[in-house]
Image (cartoon, rainbow, N blue to C red):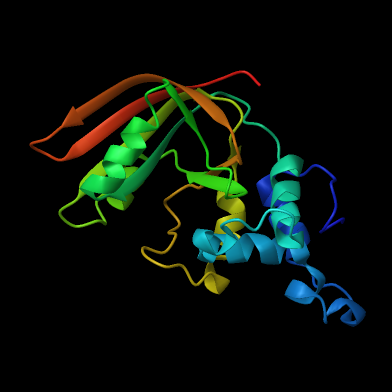
Length: 201
């Protein structure tokens, strides 16, 4: 079964492995011994709780989850939505001047979706600020964890909109790099759309 190891599984198969309780002698460990499952549950509940947690067991547990999942069979089209105020937007855009975007090194994973509707919904949660939507066409290095998030849904205490059955969740790992292909900023609608392309490692 290998719930905490490195054996490759699809997300659906790993969710099935995680559904089986470990013997009672492991129950004093995080997640009653299901350390990878517990780390993913915590991350899905509050990404910010993992800021600068590099080197901790739960950071390593999350990266093991990412490593054991397969890459997509076909290139995916993914989006990420973010709400920003004016100051944060200016800093974010300045960071793209080198025509490169990277997932933040302070976090083990970054959440994306294959639903443009979902990305726009998350990007619109900042009130009168700016809605920023990133798009990657031909994504090959992201991993689909939708089945895992759905399996953990009842135990996720997410800040903001909860995950729903019709949405997907994909992850990129820390410090993934992308080429910025275009930035479209509309001051009237207060929206920014950014096209990215994966950069070969």
